[in-house]
Image (spheres, helix red, strand yellow):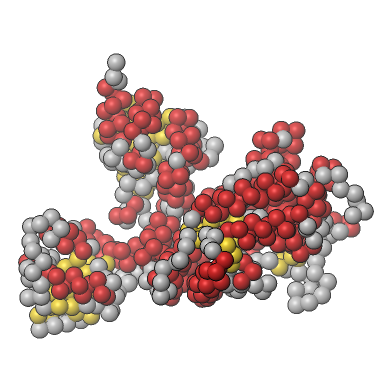
Length: 639
């Protein structure tokens, strides 16, 4: 018999994210477990300090106030949730008590969604996981801004404060505007907008603004067949045009756009339609200028039309990273978000570079990000490590094909350098013919490294074994991974050699538990946190994961978490290593941002006693896991 209540709940949920990202069967299964809860007006759903519930909530009818509790005990509303809004998500991310109050503003019906039912689906569904992750980690924006509507709420009041009085700042004005007369046809206006790659055009007469036409107007009128393309644009323009002077603030612009249901405002000399147009303000540009929301930054990256714009967005990503660290958001969340933004930037650059080539790629290819980006651990601006695989071609076409991809790689690496990723000193980049190879050539190269490993080959393996596809045909990267694991299975000796290499950097502490610092060079007396602490854990996690044939996990912390499942007897050690890897990466990132460098070399004089103690606790995990590797791979202490 059909469960009509569950069906009605599912029918409601499907219109709101993240439930709109779930297939019908799963959504119905979730709906069967949902409880329908009724609250009278001014009743508490949960209070600050209360233990997290086993469910989160979505408003079906009514409204809920989210309230911050001030130091004097008074409550202050920081957000309002109405139909379709979700709140109370903290139990999904952290086993902590609530940090705010949730109280009904009127009679309210809530759907209570069990965490135990929803969490497995969120973890298995990438789109749902990304939505939850971005929404949870990005709530540094003002809660009353329009983009907040429909987003998930992390229940963290400190993150819901206005960022540096953002909405009192001046609006970003685009001064290079495109104008046309009212008699211009829709066809000609659309062609002009397409040529200039813009989404709006100002209609003027005697240089005075009459109206605005946007892509939305074309969709509503032309695409629906209501008007022909030879109709004058004055028939579809939004008029009268809303005008302001250049002193317009972001808050004023947002309120004006909401009031008049528009997404563009004209800037004129005196703020009226009676003077010449000086610029235009769009809702999109306001959102991008805020720069503290991953989804906004992602959209900006995908729309960026120049390397210069990508560089500006990259700077905003660094501000986002700094904000996350200041808010003490877990590094697991930070790493995933920054990785996705970095990856999107790489994709955008490659896409634009392909467009600049005279011809499309001759065959399928894959662009691989290596090292820290491949492990989803690249937070700061570091050297770029990358490689390129292209499909096999006949021998007589091999060099021509390689030359095409080398030219493409040169364009891509050049632009990555412009936005902040310096060239690899060892030239481990796709623009190097050594690392721009066909599928068969890459397989042969990895076979050589594994079957006859020398010092150089082991070093290369430590970099190339940690890769992630950033662009192209995943079939090539997956096929190469399968080949690598098969070769390792056939040549067991390789793991012992790799394990010996993982011990080349001993514990970072010397006699009397003193930090081992650089003895010479420009960084003399500085502590090399990458070489002495991060790399030993990275190397240990890699070789132990390879020994268990663990695929599709390259992040160091996640590798150790998986190892904790595979070796219950060493669970505590592996979880300590996972924690240490995240703590060390966070520590390096903080100092890198502070000193505006890679964070690799630490001045011990700048550290507090507490910081030194925390570092030494992390170093204990390095020694213990290296001792384990010696036993597991039967490595002689004299090697």
